[in-house]
Length: 394
Image 1: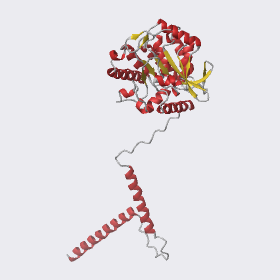
Image 2: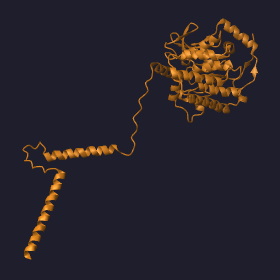
Image 3: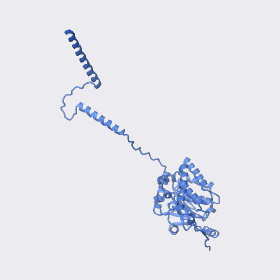
Image 4: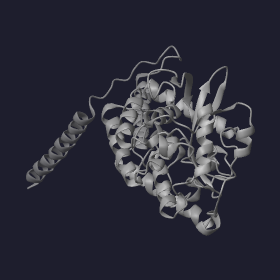
C-alpha cells in the first residue's frame, strides 16, 4: 500500500518536472537563445550589447511612431500642381498686357474727350481729303447730342463686348448715327457694329475663330486668321459705313509711343488693316515686334489709348476688365456692375490671350449683356438719348 502511494507521488513529480521543462523550452524557442553575459567593459565609452539592442529598439519604436503620425486621419494639403509651361509668345502677350495695365493705372488712355484732343502726343490721322469728306458728311447729316460709346482693349474677350453691344442696340442706346471708338478688340466691335451685321452672327464667327486657334494655335498666327475671318464677314462697303463714325486707336512708334486716332478710311481693306494694327500685340499676333500702317511703324492701340474718345460730346466707356482693379474711375459698363460670381482677373487675362471654350465664350457674352443692363437701369434711355440737332455749316 505504501509502495503504491510512493510510486504515484514519484510519477506526479516527474510529470510536473516534464511540464516545466516543456514550458521553458517553448519560451526559449520563441524568444531566441539566452544571450551569454558579457564580461564587464573596461572602457565606459563603449556601450554594451544589451544597451545597443535597447537603443535599436527605441529607434525602431520612434520610426513606428513617426509612421503612425503620418497616418493621421486629417488629410494633408495636396502638392501644388506644376505650372503649365507657356510659350514665349504667350509670355510676351502677358508682359504687354501688364505694361498696358500700368499705363492705364497711370491715367493714360482714359482721359476725357477734351483732354485727349488737346493733349500733346495724340495724332489725328486727318489727310486733306479726309477733312473735306468730313465737312461734306456734316452738311448732309445731322449730328447727335447723344453719347458715344468707347470699347476697351480686350484681346480675345471679344464676346463680352458683343454682349454689351447687343443690349445697347436692343434698347436703342446705339443707333446708326451713334459715334463709336475702340482699341484692339474694341476697334473690331466698332467695325462690326457699323457693318450692320448682327451680334449673334458676330458671336458665331468668334467661335469659329476660337476653334481654329484652339486646334492650330494662337500665337504668331492670330493676325492671319483674324484677317481672313474679317474679310469674309464684313461687307465690301465697310469703309463707307465707318467713315466719320468710328475711331480706331493705334499706337505709333517713334522716339516714344504715341496715340494715333483714325476715323477716315479708303477701302474695306483699309478698315481691316486699321483694326488689326490696333490689335497688334508685339511678338504675339505675328512673329515680329511691330507692324506697318500707312507707312508708320505701329503696335496695339491699347498701350496709349485704352478707351479712346468718340466724336460725341460725351463718351460712355465699356471695359472688359474690372475697372476698379485697374484703378479706373467713371467707367460706365464693366464687370464692376455685377461683381458677384465673376472670373478672376487672372482668368480674364488668360482668356484674353488664349481662346476659351465655347461655353465660356457664351458666358462672357451673357456677362457683357447683364452688365450693360445694370448700367441702363441707372441711365434710362429717355434721359441719356437726346434730341438730334443740326450741325452748323460753313
